[in-house]
Length: 508
Ligand SMILES: Nc1ncnc2c1ncn2[C@@H]1O[C@H](COP(=O)(O)OP(=O)(O)OP(=O)(O)O)[C@@H](O)[C@H]1O
Ligand SMILES: [Mg+2]
Image (cartoon, rainbow, N blue to C red; front, side, top):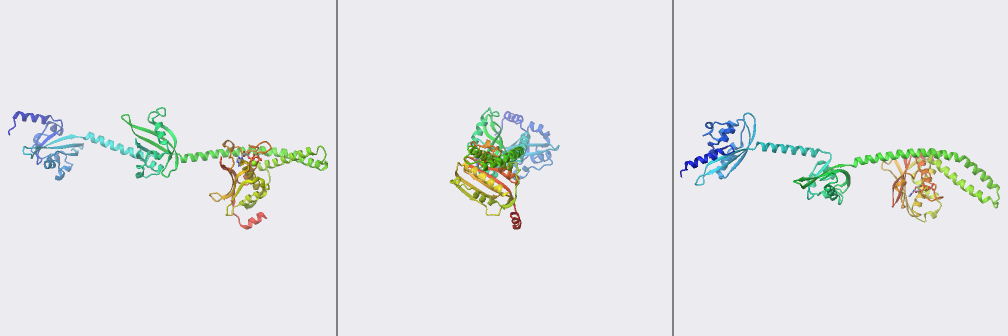
């Protein structure tokens, strides 16, 4: 059927006014028409392209390139002819000047009345900017991914349901999950019960760090093995169009930092304690020496008078009181001298176990242990120490008396000996099931005259004497555990390894 010339003209006008470069091809690729935009875009002279094949024109236009569409099987024109449906191809083209361009070429078949493909319209869309943005976006993503992965802080993101959608290597290490496992767990599994909810509540509270932001917070997280790990974290809610879509957290392991801080605090406390003990020791030594001389006179003349005075003399009772109290003072002076390390020590090598057995033997008063179960947990290893055995026994007896007092004479007393983990220090532990030592008293118990016992019951010199004796013998005394379930005092001395001859000489 002949086409009305007016309609033909109209069709040509439509073709020319298309805003995409467009050409009409025969099914063998011969170009039969191109629109104005095509000529302008590629600066072609119509005479040089009409009648040529699309491959010829492409080769001339992009001489350095081979397009996949030049291969028959992936030629979109051939496919459009075969399938009679539109086909497209994305071309990455570099022209003679070296300019790069991305083109989306769509091949649409024009069917004849009998349904066969007569011509193909090829329209070309320049998608270079889209591609550039895509590349920029993917480069940016790659960079962000690298930054996230190489961060020493653990970074985690979860969706609204709490599923983990991102975890960097540091987070996998901190939480103990592999990259496959981490996607299987929920954010709630990373915290002790209720903490994840509390963090979300704080994140939504605008008064704390602003909307959707959590300032640096100290929390405990839970790793795969169920261990709680102290961390410092910050977190944020991620919004999209004002809606919460995910949350992200950054975690820093505090274990090492806390361990260093604790060591520092312990070292500072130790320096403070040592300084305090040294100055108290000097004071105690001064007082003891000053009192010692008059005390010796009181005891000497008192004893002489005791010998002379008849028992039924009216002043006899008063003299007894004077002698008893003077004797008590002598005991105090003795302890003060031991604390200030002014008493002479006779060192010998002996099994540390003997300090337990001898001390228990020395406490004659069995009534003391009537309601106290005594457990001896002594090491089978030969653990020898070099010290003044009498002084060490005095220390152990003091610890036993304190333990019995703390248990109000009812409970379990355990005396144990062992080696420390290095095997170089011998330990003697005295454990009771008593009332424990309040935290505020822990720094004072070794001070001379510190006591919580009633007037006349304790002088507060037992532990200070013990402190002096242990220092004198290159050892230590400390509380390893105290609380409502009881207290453990530890005596520590260097372990001695000597031949039996040396022991014999030392003891002999
Ligand atoms: N095992 C223990 N359990 C609880 N508190 C203890 C224990 N050992 C010592 N204490 C506390 O430490 C304080 C000081 O003890 P320390 O042995 O120096 O003096 P004391 O027992 O009070 O008097 P002293 O030993 O001179 O008779 C005690 O008064 C008590 O408060
Ligand atoms: Mg005591």
